[in-house]
Image (cartoon, rainbow, N blue to C red; front, side, top):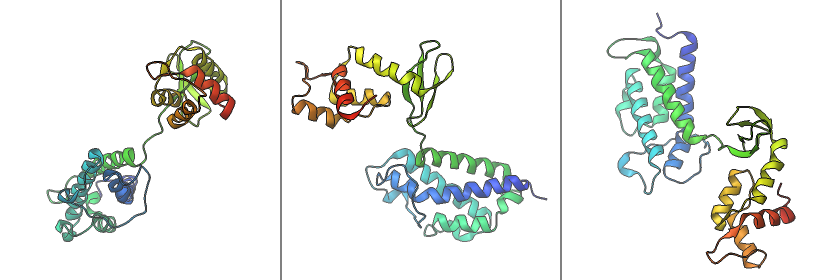
Length: 242
């Protein structure tokens, strides 16, 4: 009798399929050949001795762990080519999906189905965190209820106050945030001010700020820093920043 029920078996199969589909993108990210985006499925086999440098170590380690897990699972399913280093992870995964003995057998040879399920679900979570990272939150503005900071998705319409947990429409707090930034006495380099504005959901590249300085639209102080107020004012006038 199966150790895993039908729903768990389907969950296991989906996890293996998702991991396999994301392997090419994971490798591209590990080798710093791509940003975190899902890629097309290809047959890839890389060993630690052939890894290019520089590499993104968390992505590379995740791939190594994937290969170890899938090869062990393939062998437990009776797919003997799983021990051949020339057999790709994709091919082994397809063999597992055709004969998922690890889901229905529980003995010294096949292992424990619950453990296999937990391992593959954890691996899928690790891969997804690298290939499809969540969007960073941005500061929407000031909470009208308590004065706390309201943060949310860069493209979202609703933010959440970190003080009182109130859900606040972005349209309510946006003007307040811009007003506070305009009146703040903040100075910094083009790069640092661009990053500060990005945190608030306002996109003014550092290159744009340097271009304004080059044209004499804004002026740096003796330390080479610019005024945040000046940048916001120019941004509103030239690019409709709000």
